Length: 319
Image (cartoon, rainbow, N blue to C red; front, top):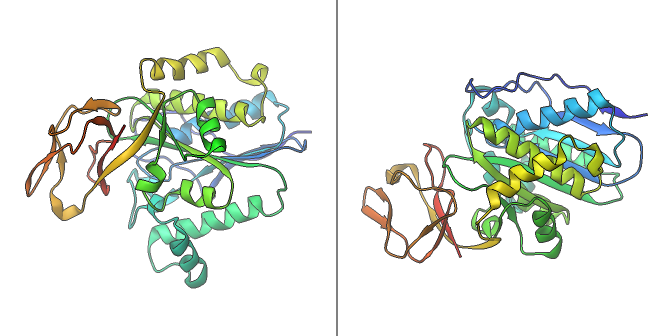
């Protein structure tokens, strides 16, 4: 008999700035009682990225409505509940930048220091611990994100066989080295636990297509980790085609070589028109700040050019 944690489906709309997620970080889970892997798919670590939450609700609703007989345990989670409710990247601090070992150890030892994101993170840590404590098999994580810029979506993987294999199953270009260039991500924490983990940057924040894209990615994750079989994925070929269309003509794998970090007082502003995975040349003016022009230090592919007010990463360059 299939079992699930109850959840409340919401309208799949991108019109409002925030998305209601309720009091629990666990949006829902599906476990038919057949032993197998634990696959966690998280979304909304940044509150201005609601597409992943909406995509996960679609999947949970489908599994429940069709009583799908899966293998193992699938858990859908939301990250920064407070920020998601108001449509902001974060309230006090970036939740997806404080998962390094030192920060996690301090939080476990000392508790929250009054920051909203400390409270959110402690709750997530407790949920992750409860989910994985007695699980003896493989643990998989996919973390769903969107971008402020237009352009090609991609998978964030570390340079290990497990991670690169999993990234390949999700059909989008794979980016390695980003987890090292951006310290303190959820991905870093799960990799440190020895789990198989990747993240996806899947479309622009408020683009309705991002929901379809992230849903397709999440289904491919469930398929790759053995939770579902092909016949159980609704319109599986359509979902594959969504991802393959995005990846067509793009580099199969890119390694991050440069990060342009920024601070609020810098007055950083990307020049308009740059897209994710756009080819750039050394010496090209990419952005400006209070000191003047910011030029590309090398040839490569621009990644995650910043077109939002909040954030500490102006752009990355991969080769």
